[in-house]
Length: 137
Image (cartoon, rainbow, N blue to C red; front, side, top):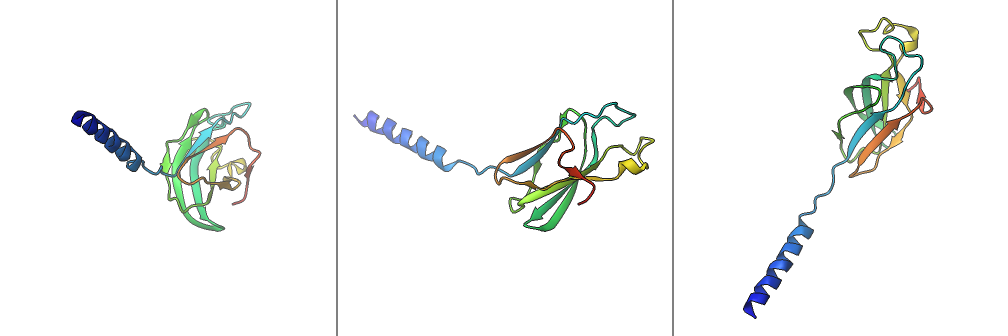
C-alpha cells in the first residue's frame, strides 16, 4: 500500500512539473520568397535583395533591421522580434549590387503593405506576387 502512495505522488509531481514548465513562445518572423519573374535577367529572377524590415508599434515606426537577401524559392532564418511590435513592413530591391541593373531606374526600393503580427508565434510572410508591393513606405 505504501508503494502505491509513492507511485501516485510521483505521478502527480511529474504532471505538476510539466504544467509549470511550459514556456511562452517567442515572437518571430520569417520571409518565404516564392516570387518568380519571367523572363529572368542577370540576377533578376524574383530574388529579394538587401531586405530591410521596419517594425511598428501602432502607427509609429520604432526599429528597422537589415536581414540580407531572400532568394527565390528560399525562406529567411527565423528572426526573434520584440513582442511589443504590432505590425511590420519590409523593403527590397530586385537587382543586387553586382548586377549591371543595380543603378537602373527600375531598381528603386520596393515596399510591402503593412503586415499585422501575431504575438508569441512565428509570423511566416509568404511572397507569391507583387500585389501588396508599392514604391512608397
